[in-house]
Image (tube, rainbow, N blue to C red):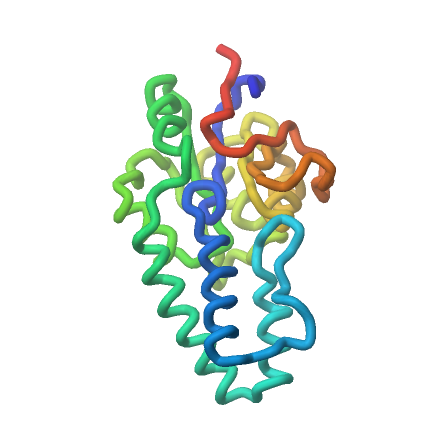
Amino acid sequence: MRLAKPRLIVLDFDGVLLDTERIAVEEWQRILHRERVDLPAPLPVRTDATLDRGALGARLLSLLGKRRSDGLWEEFERENRRRADEEPLLPGVGAFLDACRREGRVLALASGNSRDWVEGHLDRLGVREHFAAVTCAGPDIAAKPAPDAYRAVLRECGAAPGTALAVEDSFAGLLAARAAGLPVVWVTSCPPGVPAPTEVESRVRDLGELAFAA
């Protein structure tokens, strides 16, 4: 997919650079099976393949009580991090980052995850130097679908929304980018019949499919 040349390309992290969304779903499936926990409804996975942690937390609390629910969440966070620390970059990411460097493109990250999670993985994977700015959810930056992370990146990079392009995998991320005024590319394995929740420039399966006009 060839798009007009953007001044700034802002990537999400989880699901765009690293396949952590899959790990989260698999870990909860494993924990619930081992503990023989029968949820009153299937594991709450959204159409975009992301885990609805809020819905899952409410179900576990109602079914198991706070003490047991907290214990399962602690196990999940520990095992989720362990598995994520073994994950390589998603297909196409390395080639995309190298191409952007050769072409002199400015890259940034706008993540809904915590800074220690994102920065830790960037350092582990040896790709931190590719990004001029990294913005993460925190006390002063609301999580997606709020546009805060994107607006913060634009301010830090001195870029206007119309000169930047966002790349997202989740519905929340797509909505956040559009609310900040950025055009957005959807990285997804969803079937073509699954609609995006907002207007997108294109749909690709991985970053390797992205190309830009000279």
